[in-house]
Image (cartoon, rainbow, N blue to C red; front, side, top):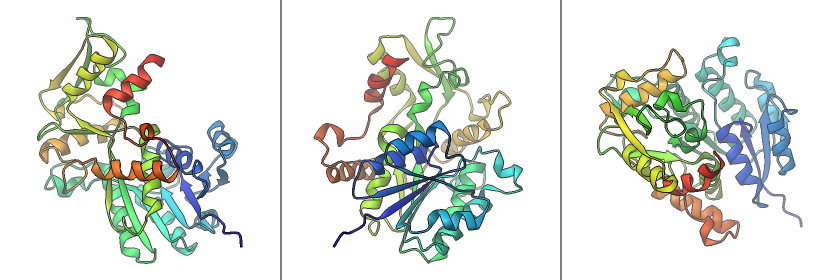
Length: 333
């Protein structure tokens, strides 16, 4: 008798997080993968299709559309783009969208639900700082926990994207590092201090996130109710520039701002949450993921389990370090 591989549906499959998860799962013949998008004809959608992902059109604002999109799914991964302007344009909040997605997954009979959540900034800081997007994701997490209709429901909270360093348009926000020299000839990383021991969690979305989430799907019962720290490496800002300088030979340095409130958002609304992030970590003594401090042991285990399940060699079983990420990616800049 032929056994059909379980179907995992990825909401936001053409985004950074969803795309990484879909690509990782598509490499494992033990799963079938469906990617949801508003535009199946986009180049990103077509690229997923070429990798074996079943691309399906879906509208998160239409519950019936989502129920149909989730039909037959054993598992679902959901990440909501908080900066998606269509949320407000359709008269929704991020929580409204999340609730719609969760309710549709329940109605479709999804067994295993993984959601990309965020830290409870208000609780962590005693009400002093609110990260709007993270808080909305945390509230969706609580709603999904309270449904009690999934066999398992688990969550991942992602760290600072290493991929941000590759985007030249972002560099001026942080002093020009690692693309633009300052007047002294340095690539200067300007940002508020993190707080606590200055242990900043970093994540390679393209290299690690998909494998971490796949690892959760490989043993969903074990991760039921848990929040996994999506983290590739942990180091200080000083360590980041030091490792970049070591890899590239380019003079680099870190300059801390006097206060998180000095972080210049340049009038970009989406950067308000970045500013609030520094406020949250400073007010919490360096905590980002919630009650616990940052840790990468869980992510490392999940990455390794995924690699072993796909028979990958030892050099593909480990998480990226900041140094190894710079070593791999900076030659293309």
